[in-house]
Amino acid sequence: MLTRYNHSTRILIALDCIVFGFDGEELKLLLIKRDFEPELGKWSLMGGFLNEDEDLEVAANRILYDLTGLKDIYFEEIKTFGEINRDPVERTVSVCFFALINIHAHSQDAAKSQNAFWISLKNRPELIFDHSNMVNLALERLRYRAALHPIGFELLPEKFTIPQLQKLYEAIYDTPLDRRNFSRKILSTKLLIDTGEKNENSATKKAILYKLDQEKYQKQFNAFHYFVSDFKV
Amino acid sequence: MLTRYNHSTRILIALDCIVFGFDGEELKLLLIKRDFEPELGKWSLMGGFLNEDEDLEVAANRILYDLTGLKDIYFEEIKTFGEINRDPVERTVSVCFFALINIHAHSQDAAKSQNAFWISLKNRPELIFDHSNMVNLALERLRYRAALHPIGFELLPEKFTIPQLQKLYEAIYDTPLDRRNFSRKILSTKLLIDTGEKNENSATKKAILYKLDQEKYQKQFNAFHYFVSDFKV
DNA sequence: TCAAAACGTGTTATTATGACACAATTTTAA
DNA sequence: TTAAAATTGTGTCATAATAACACGTTTTGA
Image (cartoon, rainbow over all chains, first blue to last red; front, side, top):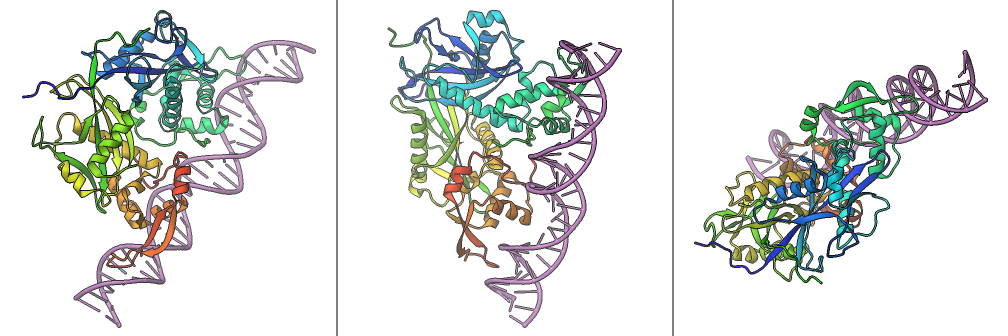
């Protein structure tokens, strides 16, 4: 009986993660200012290696936890990058995924310990290796998914207003949306529950604070219909 | 300067491929009746290991070529499976993807050399390891993609009729579609070119043979709008 | 030649969408 | 105290997309 495959090539497996956040105005990325080799001093995604005794999914959660101090974060695998020379140090195959978090809920200490900073998506610096390609692909995937599934909520606090949600979608798609049509479409999904409260931070008319109907959210998640209308890709 | 990472765990990387075909009536999978260890005699997906000097994408093409004799096949990565014990022989991380081919265009010799057979998707046998999970995920992804992108054509011969295309979509979604609405929707995409020929195999009224407008297909591919209406997921 | 099967096209009611207008709320400055 | 400015909530209307449905045509073979 075999105990090992007769194949010579065992390869390092990395995980790289694109963490999206939303500050109310624009999309942001949680990026690492590297204080370690290789490429010390440059910007990169948060990443890590897959350990011998660790499931791939567990590793993804570990890496996200080390970066944010959060558990049960929403994330999706995007693609596995496996070009021979993508990492100049040594051949490394990287499983890439994106995560969505509430920008105000994560641990400052965790971010500090990784030397991580929120950087505007639009003004992001060059990243090491193929990490810029990963970010581009992640944004594409986020747009694709958010058009059909209500994942945008993952980027917002528990209570939010419809105008805030609209600003988020405008940031994701980098395009203005009609306020009235957007509101109608969102409310027609019946995913929002009126909390009875209003946004006291507003300097003008205070908008209604909603929360997500978690039960419906789970149920409807895979029943994809255009979640955002009034928008052409 | 580093020449290698200081991390101990290098792991075998496999690729596993779900090959879909369509025989005019139902979806089929090209599966391997294993005449090699491990799990000799059982059914599995076609797979292989990633070589040291090989890009991941090149490896996927190699594996598909060995199985079908075809190059430039349509395929999409689905997910990377990385549970510790998914392969009982040795820890193996598997990059999983699905491919769509014209069931009549592939090499019989290539299939024979791999001991591969077309098996009805609906009546598929149990597969080794986590391969059944892979197939389930592939079908889900195929449905997701085919609802928004005209990838169904990849499963048909160069010239095909609208009723044939409809049968394909009915097979993918396992649901009947209205003939008149389907035809209207498909023709409204302007992706089909009337070849002037008719399907001579028919025992009744001969349907018009169309071919795909390749240029428009490439252009419109990422402009996702519901390609199949009259259908709820 | 006529019945049966499958194909092509058309109609209509309903719903969804995009474009647009107006009234209500809240703060601030006159 | 009040008016202006900013923002929010809701409504209307014309057009497009969709689902449900009907009819005539082509082809084979009994």
